[in-house]
Image 1 (cartoon, rainbow, N blue to C red):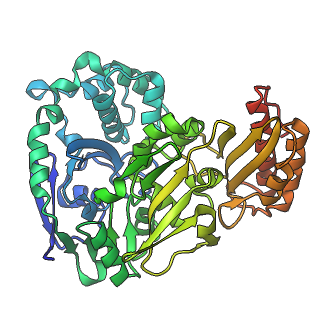
Image 2: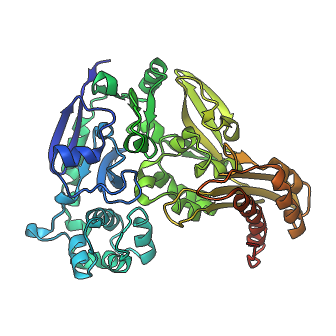
Image 3: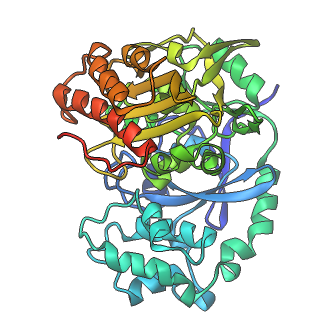
Amino acid sequence: MTHRSEIRFLLNGRAVSLQQVPASQTLLDFLRIERRLTGTKEGCAEGDCGACTVLVGRLHEGALRYEAVNACIRFTASLDGCHVVTVEHLSGRDGALHPVQRAMVEHHGAQCGFCTPGIIMSLYALWMQTPQPTETQVETALQGNLCRCTGYAPIIRAAVAASQYGTPEADHLTLERDRVTAELTALKDGRRVETGPDDNRAILPADLDDFAAAYAAHPQATVIAGSTDVGLWVTKFLRPISPAIFIAHLPELKSVEVSPEAITLGSGVSYSELQPLIAEHLPHLSAYWDRIAGWQVRNMGTIGGNIANGSPIGDTPPVLIALGAEVTLRRGAARRNLPLEAFFIDYGKQDRRPGEFVESIRIPLPSPATRCAAYKISKRRDEDISAVAAGLSVTVKGGMITDARIALGGMAATPKRAATAEAALQGQPWSEATFAAAARAMSEDFAPLSDWRASADYRMRVAQNLLRRFFLEQDGLPVRLSA
């Protein structure tokens, strides 16, 4: 197989070809330092504040799709075959302000102005997808944009009114869609890309089999899908990541299959890509899903990456373990299946051999007799890391609990099931007394730590109260829990 050494993509209205792209170079640095596109700001350098928001368009099954992403933690090498759109590319008819920009002016949505370009790019992405948004949709789109002047009310009014000043049908991204699609299609040559200096090497496999071969050959490599965690390794901890294998472009890892029994998805499926199926097949996760990070991170971050990262406070493992999820691990051509809960061994340690990666996740769909819930407890409601995350799945037949799966994050060194609490539920009647006993039993399952997010006592009290809350909500009773 012949390799290519340059990264090729479109930047606003121009084609870009870059040689020797370091694996650790962020898109933000490329834009500001090399191209002087300074409308994209650095605020936090960790994907929290949204001042660096840009749009990235990629072909998916032949269709061009744009998403808002954080340039501060997106790596330039990952952009091969993409269209990057910055705030400088926005314009209205005959050089006038873009409709979103004009709405921000008319409704006084800009205050100090530092975060305004990123906010405009998020609202641009929303306007393209949903020209007539509700306030709730606007608030969801702005979860990843922090306004330090605290002036969200005029911003929301501007977003709701944007279509009064123009429609997406007349936008240049719409008018140029066919041309951009053709140009991106022409960039796809089916070759592996290897670029960057020897000590900062980036590898973009040609396909899934090539990824398996590359990782088996370089088991010490950093595998990067959404970069929502690895980006911080670079920007905050200055950690070397070479060689880095980028996999977000692999369509095989974006596959999703739905059967009456389960949803099976490739590990590269993002939170945003899975969201419609969550709403349709696992509605108890919908509100929880909206609270995972901000919109930009949900567009970038992947389910497989959240699992493979192995964090004890990752958002997806507890709720997926409660549903009985399994992962398929692959090394070279060899595959093995593993219950998700068995994948996590200890803090920072997973049952993953050198050169082995998470290829897919199978999520069983609950039966009609199974009652499910998911809870996320954090200091800030939106775009915050969990202090405690919980997934519950309880099967009830004839008024008796026949099965129970309770998994929590933030309570131990790994995402972990509450085995003692589960045993206290199984075979018992569905009653408040049963759940109170199970809540007491939970103290035998965990010995949580105290940190700046929560104390050990708080975590235990919250976990026990979430079990009581589950019973009350399922029975439609008012939720009144102890402090």
